[in-house]
Image 1: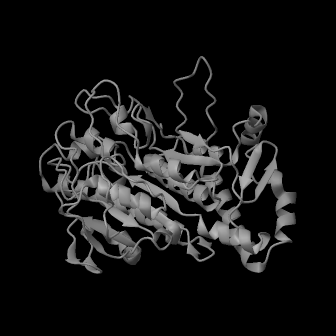
Image 2 (image 1 turned 60 degrees about the vertical axis):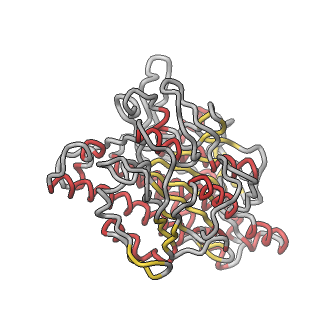
Image 3 (image 1 turned 45 degrees about the horizontal axis):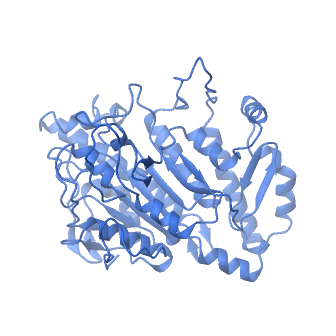
Length: 436
């Protein structure tokens, strides 16, 4: 689900033939005052989630303390970014008991307990509390992304509604933000206004035209008015837009009364779908279409087929409940490592996009974690959570953060404060955790 904001940002837009292409900040087009305002208020909040935790913690062994720490075997791809991220130790959640995955997923951004197995009810999530407090002046208030669809419906946990495993973001206790499961739909949320002519959009897709093809004259005009650095920034962004579009080359499934079950998964494999979603997420932040994003790389109780890793035909959730044969443990460790590889990829993408005063990653609060600490035991203590980015100076990355004794809600409250959203309290916590 995409929550749109009627206000417009100070970013430049190109509009033609049913598209609205938001451009990244181009300081040379702005007055000195507007440039300072854009630089000051473009913090982003990103929440990334993967299911089923770690491999009996064997791949999440963090050693050392403070800035002198070593990562686990799952984190090879994250090592080049170690100075840009902090790992939590001793972070527990109160959402113990069964159903473990539903409780852990529901609490990830809410710190709330659940009690109704039939009708999903949780509480407002921290991303929406931040959105309420900041009212970001972006076309999309917040963007919510999910994995490729499950043919038989989203995973449910021991008789509880699948909604608890599906929704990370909640506007209110009974109002979840349903994630978009199609990268193409997510892409069009950014570049195609909701009031655009449907026939024009369908023609564009049928002719395999880029959203940029209708704005070439406007682009040429802008390129003559910006400095060399901004022209290079614009070229990099436009190249990224085209590359992502080219990766979404499956036709859109236009659902009608007779084919409403045709879910728009774009025909991609799970691995390709994940990478496409991360690319769309990056574009959405780069052009300031939104500053708040949540992404479930898979849902709670996730049971995707990971045979593409070459470790055997294993489904993720099943691995943790079928014994401890070495090959099963190795396969699960490969899956956990694959998820960390995806996290490293998107952090690297965000760190490669320069803005005045740093990169997008420098100005972001990126919260990453899972529903349980361990796939075998469903433990909820010492959760595998991490924090990346600089938060525009509000975060001190590159450390082990000892959260022993802290409430989970106080961590989420601290994330809001790092985003300059001065919430007086959240989920029962009135004092934010100190030390992010």
